Image (cartoon, rainbow, N blue to C red; front, side, top):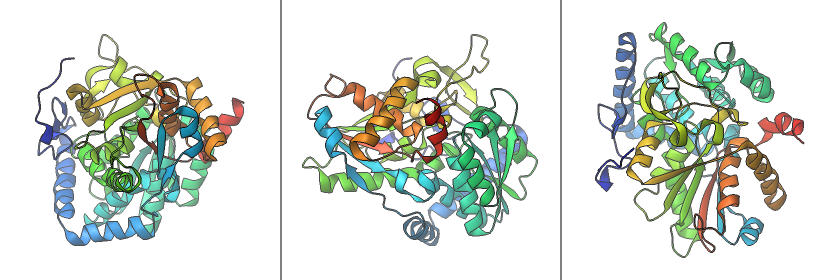
Length: 396
């Protein structure tokens, strides 16, 4: 695909009413869902411009979610690799991942809109846990759709969701993973838009979700940029690295650094690398890079990390790749497993399998032309590894 000519000022800005990031994004939904999407967009624009809404969200992020999260120097790993690694610790946020940032914002928006129930899809379970948590906090009900395969490999998070009062609906169609959970959540939303709000967990879906979720996750990048300015002599890291499935933690982080000299690197799962192996197509209401066969049929993704087991990528990431502002790479399951253990033993930090994709690329690239010695790297740990204990134990 050729490069798309855009002005630098347009990168990661408001996509406007069309929801387009270059040739990607948009709103490809049944006619019956268009009014619901338009309602969400109008409500979010109104709320995002309202000082009281922003104040309430900022307050919850601070006193409930535990923001700002720490920027932790990885001293031993840095010495071993010959690069300076700074870890943005989203694993320390309440519920154990970055997902709470987005969900608190959307849950407050849903309440402002008069909705009583939150609908959500989940793969690794972290978005489901965050949705169940926000629903409990705000006195709402929550229904979370989750593929049967993911339920089997993410038992602790299923238990947590149910303990928090959410209904967890198993999805047995297709690959029984995140893609299929998204399908069922959207079907449910079509039939219940009057009282239900679809709380999408990543920078995907029809407009305004990719833009809205990025804005709600921008807190990661804004915090990290300020923290790096205080930590680094250069103020800005040479590289900013984050894992990418749909890509919300990466989008939120990148948004804080697009106007700087930092090189942005998104790390996909090798078996779900939509940038490397996908083609332009439409999935779950948005146009992006999608894994598909020659007939345009969606093909299955694979990843040891349930949260990256998705056959597409957020449309803004496809745009960042097309413009050359960000680079997207992939790592395999074996590298990921090794990265979890390497980080745990070097720094005493047990990260999620999703986050370990970013760690794995840094381990591979350090000291090469991709990541030269003496570089500084901001590496986002999007979540903690407690949820993956059973999966990891089976492979040891």
